[in-house]
Length: 140
Image 1 (spheres, helix red, strand yellow):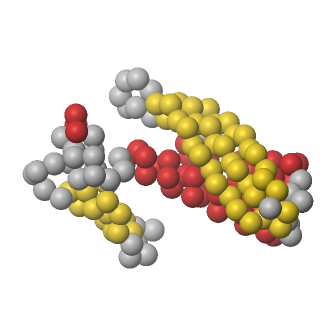
Image 2 (cartoon, rainbow, N blue to C red; image 1 turned 60 degrees about the horizontal axis):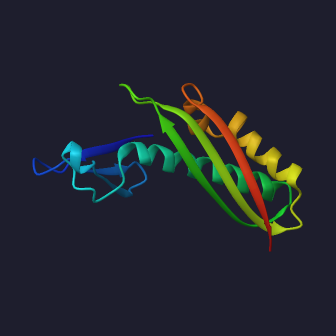
């Protein structure tokens, strides 16, 4: 896997990233750091990627178990260290899973499997952050 990140130039702290699969992503810094707040911060992108990784796992696990899953959202709320390096210290993943006749124990198992076995991003972040999760099920 490879990505390329390029600074957009001296007028700010924005960057463009190109993924190995050919997709472009913009990133920018906060105004107090010289950015213009025109795109997500790099650390927000870390959370976005982690949310995508675990949501993908949860949906895949539920589908493989023949659950009638119809929607999945996850909101990540994170805290960071006060001093450099400002690593994530706590992250809560709150899932809202929509489906027909979904069993809470099945949804919980899918989330736990993602966090403990499959989601490389959350497993890496667990090296510095306390990871917790919660979920709600919405009947479709």
